[in-house]
Length: 338
Image 1 (cartoon, one colour):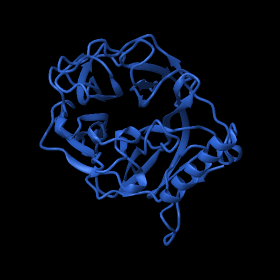
Image 2 (tube, rainbow, N blue to C red):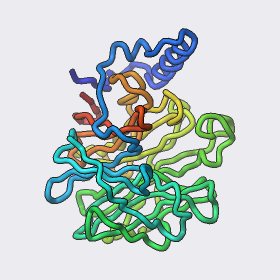
Image 3 (cartoon, rainbow, N blue to C red):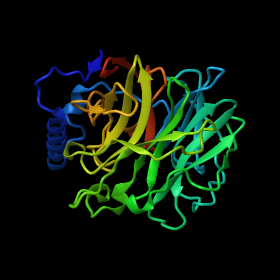
């Protein structure tokens, strides 16, 4: 069955309705100690394709058609990597640590949400790590290798480091049809927030914009200033994050997550535009939420294959946050998942 988020014009914004429904369902579970919600009872159960702690997954098809997935630090590695012949697997987690030594601008800790792109004959790794000067914040860095499995050599300076605004995380590469390279990332405003879930639910709420930075032909050198693509609204809760940009049939699709990853309201959402620089219009409802359309909890951190046919994302599992994969279909400004 295909679950589509396309809604006719004139319907109310279902983001608020979904949030209210999920909160109510969560409270019922707490009060009655029910093991699963009504939403989860109706939803099909899917299983992880990587059944270890593998948060914030990114996916890349290499020139030999092998697929690789990359994940936030864990299991003794700064950058985890797995390999498969197709997005649906079977996936094999490899022993390699792609970034044994992060950039010297960082403390070398908390290496989050890596992404790898092949630019020419070089592989470029985008990642974030804790900044040495402001250890409560992250910056986005780059590293390069002649091999997709590394090890990658980190640049001496960060690519994006807006510390006064909260730092930067969740970087993801993108190459447009004219060959121009970009990276999208989140300004981590909630790291300087005033409390509540993810540190940013209490007023005044700090912006958490998703930014677009043009890059030189090397894929690591910034060209000009970054520009904002999206920011949070009240329907998104305390933040938006984890941007990923693809282009399908002339439509730019930006996947992102809203709400806080420590709560069941965390989700996978998307926005679309007819131009790279926008304006982007958010979908009327998230693509994946807790219990709908799958029997999973706290989905987020999604990235699509460049052809827009497959989506990897994490959700809670016994091991922590495991990687899931599902087929998607993009028709105009509508994304469906099956």
